[in-house]
Structures are given as C-alpha cells and as structure tokens.
Image (cartoon, rainbow, N blue to C red; front, top):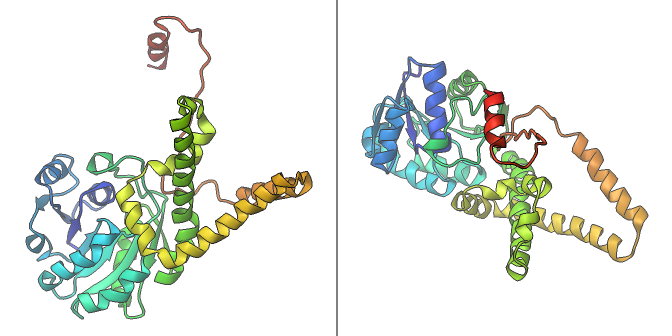
Length: 316
C-alpha cells in the first residue's frame, strides 16, 4: 500500500502530480525534492506537497513510491544518487519523454529489491515550472507506462492504480514501442514547428514586420515551439536513433510537395493535400494532448476608447 510518495523535481509535471494526488488521494503523504529552496516554499504554499527538502537522500529514504519528474537527461544520475537510500520494496517511476535508453541502464542502477516502472504522461502546457502546475493536468490524458520484462506485476498494478486515480488513461507499451510512436506524434512535430519558426525568423531579420502578419494558422502550427528548449534538446538527443529516419521521411514528404509545385502538377499536388486532409480527419478529436486546446472567441466591435471596458462589464 502506498502511503508516502516522493516527487523529485517540482516543475510543471512534478507539481501537477503533487496537486493531483492531494486532490484525489489526500491520505498520501507527499514529499517534494528540488534543488531550489524557493520552489520548495512555493510547493508548500500551493499545497502541491506536504513537506519538502533539497536533500535527495532525506527525501527518498522512507518513500513507498518515487516519481522522478526532471529533465530526461538528468534521470540516470538521479537514479544513481537515490539508489542507496531507497527502502526495500520501493517503486520508482519517471515521467521522461524517452524510455529505451533509461530501460537499458535502470537495472544496473537500482537494487534488485527496488522496482522500476517507466512512465510518460501525454499532457503538458505552454506554462513552465511549478507556477503552471494544474491538479487536473492528467485528467483524460493518455499516460503511457513502459514495464520491463523484469517488472513485478504488483509494482505495475500499483503505478497503474495511481495513474488512474488522477484521471489519466493508461496505455502499456514496451520502451522501444513508446520511443517509436511518440517520436512520430510528439518529437517530430516539435522539430517541424521549430524549423518553421526559424525559417520565418530568418526572413523577419531581412524584412522586419513579417511576424506581425503571422495570424492564427501560423501560431497554431508553431505553438509547441514555445516549449522549454533544454527539455527538448535532451529528448531529441536521447531519441536520436528513431528521430533521424523520421526527419528523413519528413524531408521526402516536403520534396514531394516541392516537386509537384515545380512541375506545375496540380493533380499531384491536390492528391497530396487531399491525402493529408483525409488522414488529419482520423485523429481523435477528444483526446487530451501535450498542450491544452486554445478556444478563440471573436467579437466585432467599433474601434473607440472604452470599448474593452464595456465588453469586460458585459462578460461579468
């Protein structure tokens, strides 16, 4: 039975885990570990944790379950440092966006009596840090768990139950399956968004004012490029073996469109666009993604002083 949980890293995901657990499982004692004293204080003030410390050993010593919610590149080092202080039977899970690299080394880092269950919540926000944490972040989101062949069924069941308790939907994948699938629908789109923004950014330097014309379509297509660069740098490098062939495939898709335009082949171009439209319609509309949806309400009003105040009064 899980009575004490320690969260390593009180950022967006770690903070949201703490808040979600305090909302749905208030009987569980939550300890937060972070390198910043200010973050610990904020975690206590926002009731994301019951107690906090900057001392890793102190934070994990009595934990029944440890959630590592830090940048993916830091996870192996944290596992190594925490291992000597984990009690027998402790379950360790993480929220990293890549899984195969960690899976390949985790058994050599943790004692045999400590159980590891990889995890990755397919939820997020444009907000960064504990200030953006949300107790409902995982509600209706897909939460991938990546058990190893050596994972004890009871440990997996415990993590599954915990994930479902905060409203998420569990999907079980192997570490390799996870990295391949998530690279396609999460990592590659981020690369595309970053490349698109940089392409227009270089043009903006040559012709200032271009960004002022970037309306809803451009903002929507590039939204994920606003996420943390350091986090995504680690993800891309960790998942390099999967990402590089995907980037090659994407370049081929771009070249198909380019060649159709160069040749003036309208039939081929329309076929490619219709194919994209058809596949786009197959994407489930109600699944929560890595970034929350944005809903836009457009109100047409005269351009005169005081009109914004009048609208605010009408909205209550």
